[in-house]
Length: 139
Image (cartoon, rainbow, N blue to C red; front, side, top):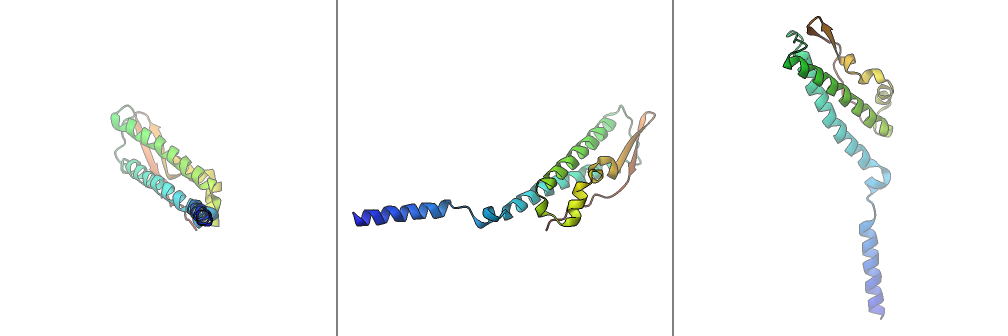
């Protein structure tokens, strides 16, 4: 009886140790790592879309052409991705430096027109690069 009780208590102890959360989960360290991966993938999309739009700067694509439609769609996707990065960043402010938190608080930094403006010039798009996107800085 005593051996059975010791064995059962040993199994229960082992099961409780194995199911305990890791120290990363207890202190939230793993959250910043996951967030960094998510934001890094979105920021690579931002860089790709910005490169595409800026490379059309001297082409002046027609508004009604396939290239003009793709340009407009890419600019809209850029806007949506910037919004996603900002909302992800604001969800965990403890993962970022104070300067990055200030940047996250300002919606101007997450507007597509802040980096590249697109205007319709009669029948063509005018593309005006403004600034270079700087990735968010983690602690």
